[in-house]
Length: 116
Image (cartoon, rainbow, N blue to C red; front, side, top):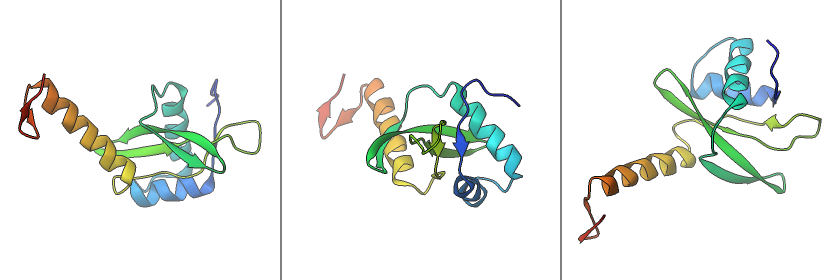
């Protein structure tokens, strides 16, 4: 399939997806990641990789969340060097942020004080 904004999906990223998310054929993993990155929305985090700031986007496969860091790469395409899973620090930060947001929207208490 042709993508308007192609990304280089490193073999390590495919291997980590199989390990952390689902054991799918490599072509299906590449297709899924490419599809997500065509319109990924805002990054959920930013990492410092290879001397530069790299956005990290969230993906979902079935019930499993995963995180896609994107770096500049050495060639003409941005690179996905790895896939982070639900065991990652980024996932923990994402979940805590979501729970905190829900808590504040309900007008709950935080540190003994009423929130808006």
